[in-house]
Length: 307
Image 1: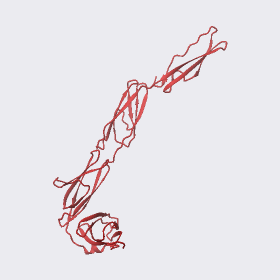
Image 2: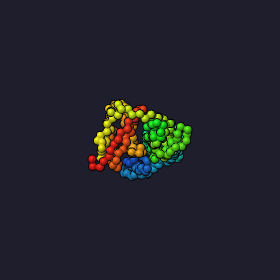
Image 3: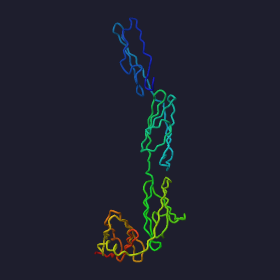
Image 4: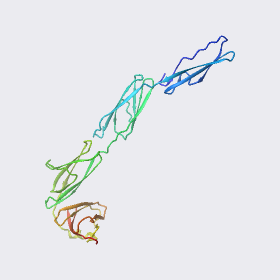
């Protein structure tokens, strides 16, 4: 016998003239698989004279097996982000568990891409199935890009890019001695040295990264200066910085005439041109500091209206 197999007593009939046949006219036969719910069974009896009569009865099949799910809060451990536990009751004891993760116990660790499905079966083969659908955030990672300081001055910078995690990030910067420096995403106007960033997301998961801001001696390389051109200059909208130095990275820092940093961009190795929008800046003269390795070039950019 299993959860859906029903065996019932067959009806009997009596008649003064004798019974010729008893025939089932409706519903599954005894020992068959029955659907959940109520099923009507009908039999017809006929005597030797051809007189007939019927009897009907109902069979109700109810799966009393119950299963409840309990899922832990999200954990920052990528090997154990969630733990799910199933609790079975009712039905006939002797429960078995099968998860889509391959686990065959009531508890499993959910690490793969959701949703996860499960099946619980009791000793008679009655089943309950379900599904757990929970978000698995990408693991947080930090990419740090440093701009060297010059002449030991506090004019270096670090740009941070954070991916993964959940929700908004919190930032804490430390210097090489472990002193708290800032709670901003990026660092600017910093001297040479080692710096570390700790990022926390809304699940209180933490990622860390460290980088060194190097010092370079400010020397103007005339050969390099000739390989970098700015156009149009003057400009009213944008300026294109063209490089005749393939396969080299560069950092571009736009400053006002007093040396205050306004904007920072990066040239990747394969790029031979970088475009910087200038249309939102007031008319005047600006300085473009371009750092290539340990070399430095400074060029003037003029912004005019209607040029």
